Structure formats: structure tokens, C-alpha cells
Length: 205
Image (tube, rainbow, N blue to C red; front, side):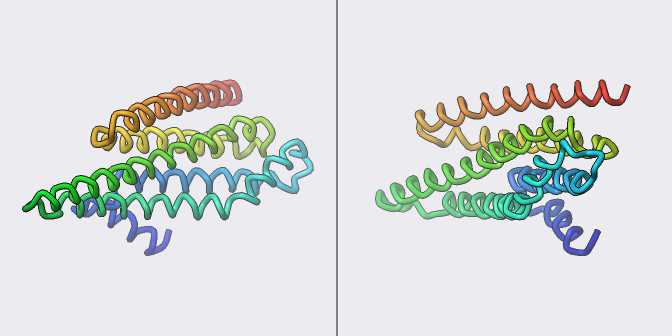
């Protein structure tokens, strides 16, 4: 662990509201990507795990772009929250200022909702891959693969909490859209993580 890592943790633990839960959800996703890639790297090139070569290659080849995207989501989440707070601080001394402030808050709220929603979507996409990896990867690393799945699941739950806290400020159609989509994401994530836990239970017995 280096000073940069410690610095991020200190930023999270400070009295500043950013980086907050949405950013942490994206950072969880980054950890899940990295842990999954580690399992793939421990599988690739091993004759004993020939059936795991294709999926491991896919994971490794996509790791760089996926990791960069998750870190970008963490940064964007913090920026979006700061922009939302700035919008609430806009003046409201005239009718024009009131309308401008309202529109700015609406746009900032939509952005602050969409970023954690995207984090949840990305986490679900990774979570879908892990059960396939579990059955063909280096079996000495199965707990790491399962751990990555648990981190994905935590990322989804945390990201969706940050969606839910913001959708109250959206128009009804957008609110309904996010509510419906997040419910589907959670349902799918619960099915997959349940499957991963069952696989691990059987493997560890």
C-alpha cells in the first residue's frame, strides 16, 4: 500500500462530503475489476486450467479500460455532488434567478443520479461474468473470484442508495425510470450473488 492509497482513504474519512458513498461505490468496482483480473492472470497460461483461458483473456484485455472507467466514475460522482451543492447555493432574489436556480438544480440532480446508476450497471456487468470464471479459473484463487463478486454486490447496493437519495428531485417520468431500472438491477444482482455463494459453499465443503 502506498501514500496515494492512504491519501484517498483520508479524503473519504474527512469532514468533506466528497468523496462520498457514490465515489466509494465506484472505487469498490475498481477493486472488483482488479481482483477479477488477478484471478484471470493466475489462470492464464496454466495447462491445468485450459478451459479458463478464453474468459481470462477477455478479462485481462478489458481490465485497463474498465479500471479507468471505474476511477472516472468515482471522480465524476464527487464532481457531480459538488455541482449540486453549488446549484443550491445560487441566488434566488428575483424571478429570473429563481428559475435559473431551479433549472440548474434539476440538471445537477439528474447528473448526480445518473453517475451512481452507471456504477451500478457496470458492477452488474462484472458480476455476471464471475460465476462463469469461478467454474474454470485457477481453483486456488476461487475465494478471490468470489470476493470480487461480493464487492460487486456491495458496489451495486451502495450505488443504488445514492440513486435513491437523488431521485426525489427528478420529474415523475425520470423518477419512475430510475426506480424501475434499479429494482431490476438489484433483483438480477441478488440472483447472481446467491448463485456465487452456492457455488462457493459446494466447493468449500
